[in-house]
Image (tube, rainbow, N blue to C red):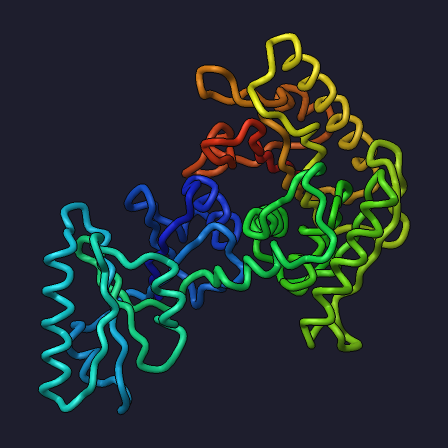
Length: 377
């Protein structure tokens, strides 16, 4: 089957995630925010970088609509084509509504407003693609698909904002980005143990166990270990499958990532955000930037040297490292790629995303996250 995927705010990162899970041969980038994926299914709730997914139809849309089960129909249309406009999209929606009414069906249209596409919030809150007869037609150029769902922004917000132990000083990793890092590290494998050696308040650990992996978290700060435990207890109390005897295992202990020995179990994958440094309100001066880069590099190199002898060849690491905004709006990060080879790792390359493309940030953010993906030789 072929699926049309709507990519997130950083589409190149989304593409790298898709390549990691499905392989580059199964992914085709067809527009800035769109990709085609050939697969048996799309695990939308596990894809941090994909907003919406639709299965491409192999029959005329009129034939598909005529075979919908009895009952009231909620219908929406999103047209991502280059020259799409809201008036024509709405006219098409009315055409399909009238066609269904002639067949005796009761239809409610989801309005597009001033855009030819439905926002992810509109699609999600109307449960388009998620409930019977809640249909979203997704169009792009010659492709027409039926939505299989939209990112659950409500669940993401709860997992992010309702966690009982939060600390803005150490940064707050978005759950979507945590999922992306996990997918880049695991390349679609469904089981195993994920190590986060800079676990902070435990966002990556939380997303790991929700995705079915065992999680091993360490942090230099005992306080962060306590925060992680509290947050993981909280998510388990709200997730029945995490309370069962066969639930993913969890290991937590304090330790310095540059010299710690991970003895509880051997990790299969590593996904982590290294320490981003103190919060900044303005781009650092050049001399300050050099010091920040040096400190971050020492930490990263120290960790890679330490973990190298404790993981198997082929183990993949997805790491978010700091990158600082410059006065001209560009970002400058940690120069580590030149040393990767002698440290015993290979840098993973992607078809649709270069190293510089893997930068996760908001426009108002001083410290961005530069993602690097490595494989132990």
